[in-house]
Image (cartoon, rainbow, N blue to C red; front, side, top):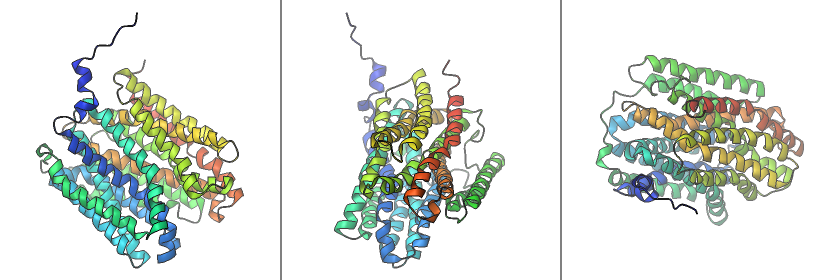
Length: 470
């Protein structure tokens, strides 16, 4: 006879109802809006760039629309923790919305490509601060028992953004003016800024903080800029050299930060023997290994399979859909199984990088969808537990800077992965134009080139969970 499971008080404490109780619903909604602004901005903008180019010209500079946004977002995410201490989370979050609003208005009004690119940089700063402050809010305003569900919800917002982003951009271009995209996001960012002071509770006031780590931020800017522009260089060999140089500069940030009075990162951030260090490493390298599919999947599918840009984008959307479903499927897990899901997720990523180069060119499309779903499930299974472990290991002193650093680590990994995938694509012939031959070669090397990154991330994930999995 089957036994009925008794619902205990502990179960109720971990339920969705308890997550949204005691005034947490408005904060939860604000965090989701902030994540949406960060996630959807880049996806919608990528869809409208051909129309922007047709009106403003300057096609040769348009890679900077992404690179500039990414540099701004990483620097903002890295500094968000200290700024939340300096100004208080409530004021800092409201100001972040103002900055993003200003960047959107600059892009919407841009009469030339120059002002448009400056607007993208300002948008990156605002978006990075919004995302970074959202991570700080999660760490400060939600009990640890709810962190897995909060991170699962954040993953869900990313999934929705990936599915709706290309559609919103396409509709704006076909029925109106590309500038309306930026007016739409300006309105959302302004609304975010207006309601943030009311929805973030009084318990989120800053303690004043010791200041801003200008030296570390300056060195970080040099390293991130080098990595972000590496795939814009004409030679793949030069791109690889610049990427390696940028990574070396990022390593210097850890050395400087360890000796600085005002730190940018939590203690142990660069030490893989610690929970924080191995957690950040897993996030960084696993994210880097995943970037090729989102960036080069659509043009490869269009060139080799004749898919429209919209349908190619939705094939890539299988990754985000699987991420969302997997995240909610394991959101209730605790104990030893959260460590196992971190490991399973890392192994799923490696498996996806084996399936995709085999399937992209001429296997049935179902295999491409399966490879993308494996990649998305990798992060759905593991990401919330990685974040929860890092937050749990942070001291009270490092909680703000450590939580906001999650955003910077992820985005820096994305920049590295994008640059390495770009160098591999250029070596495969894509620098000479998108042809059937260059697309076929790129469909293999874009993925094979990042398998070492996935293996490093998997090793870090296994190291992180070594004590919990016998």
